[in-house]
Amino acid sequence: MSEHPSENTSADAPISCLTQGSLTPSLFGESNDITLNLLENIRDGFFFLSNDTTLLYFNNSAECLLSRQRHDVLGHKLAEAFPEIRDTELESRYLNALRDKTFSNFEIYFGTPPYENWYDIRIHPFTQGIAVFFLVTTAQKIAAQESREKSEQLSLILDALPVAPFSMRADGSWEMMLIGPTIEEMTGFPPSTFTKNPRFWITRIHPQDERLLRRSLRELPAVGAVELAFRWRVADDSYKWFAQTLRKMESTTEDHLVGLFYDISDRKKAEAELRYQNILLSAQQETSPDAIIVTNRNMRITSWNSRFATLWNIPNDLMQTQDGHAIIEYISQVFRDPAAVISNIHYLNNHLSEEEVNTELVLRDDRIIERHSRGLFDKHDEYLGRVWFFRDITEKKLAEQRLQELATTDELTGIANRRHFMRQARHEVERARRYNLPLSLIMLDIDHFKMINDAYGHEAGDRALRAFADIIRKSLREIDIFGRLGGEEFAVALPITTQDGAAIAAERLRRAVSTLRITAHPEPFSFTVSLGVAQLDNSDLDNLLKRADAALYKAKSNGRNQISLA
Image (tube, rainbow, N blue to C red; front, side):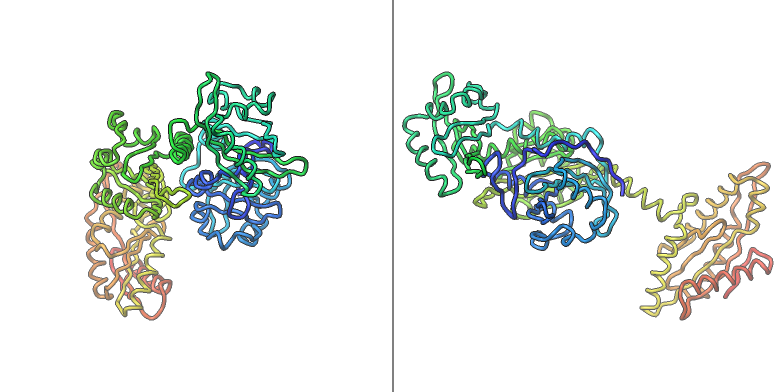
């Protein structure tokens, strides 16, 4: 198992603590519908381990990436839910994080089936345990800069939020003890004004709202959490609408109220919550390697990142219209099958809860774009829209294709290598037996090939092998299997062919080879081939190869450049 660890940081990470299936009090209180919706809609897998390694939370992406349902793993120890992790470096990482309470970010290869993949893992320690974010990075390892951006992603999002986290006393005085720096931008007062005069914030509440706010604060212990909206007098003595979300956080020393303070002056509270969520998404979008857009229920684009416009080369004036239908029409011209792409988009817009994973879109210029999308719903299960992710995976596909070719193709001749030929031939033998069909095999060996190498050099010998493979391939049917077994030895499996038919095909191949003329120094040369033919009987492929090889040996012993039947 190999890895690329990052530096550890302290355990004081700014993420809400989690318990099984829900969010518990943290620095930011319990207005966590948005946070939970974010956790359930991010592409990262996410889970939370208690100090005794019990799985307490397991998000949608973790289910998808690890092919495990949360109800199968929640409440179980990590090694019970995933026995494959026992005694591995990854298990040690988790146990060390739980013991040392240190943050870590590393890339690691986990080689135990069925989880064989490269993973980018971020571990955030807490008093209750550790929060783990992870991505499968097998297709393309994240570059060093991107890795650093991902590790900083959460802090960047928090820095971009137009909210101020705060903490106040829960003893009935409601004195402000701590408040975030964003409060100065919202109110014109620095945080020190609130903390040096702890009751300053409550003295500037609009008189018509103060009674309701005080009553809500008194009711907080009974209800557990409240959301408040009120008018507040800012530095220029004008009133602005603000909202607070509050939750009581119990402590062994002194209980506190924690929450968020944010401006909702120009929008209704529900619209403010949606705006807050969109800002979270926008901050994440710009640090993502994907091209991202968010559309509402009417296919109007409410949010997008710069990568989206760049990927599809969309003019800025068209992008600014935010007209999803017009933009789809514009980019449809680049698809190889635009009708199918548009039809699929309509289907997803009519099936709101359906998640789309790894849809591949082929462009006219042969690029391949991977698309992932998911419906967005608020805490009342009302549909808000859909988030779409796009990533150019052309290089990934080309690499996969090259790897496949390297694994199955003889590099010199371009035909099947021995392993691939044997796999395909065994499949044909099984099919012939299942359906009681004839199958024959031809073994081919270039005559006096060593003499060719000695007389004309290995480069000329390689040209001879390539020309030989090319003319044989052109002389075969599409269903025939042709492979290089090694050196100058080749084999052809002929499905649905008797030995007599194979003998006819072998003679055709022999004659074709005799027409070849290879350019070389000091003069061009020709060569011949010997062939052995055998038909499948009640034995297996290995026996069939031995019989064909024996026939080939007989052909060589009888003078070469001829066919011999088993």
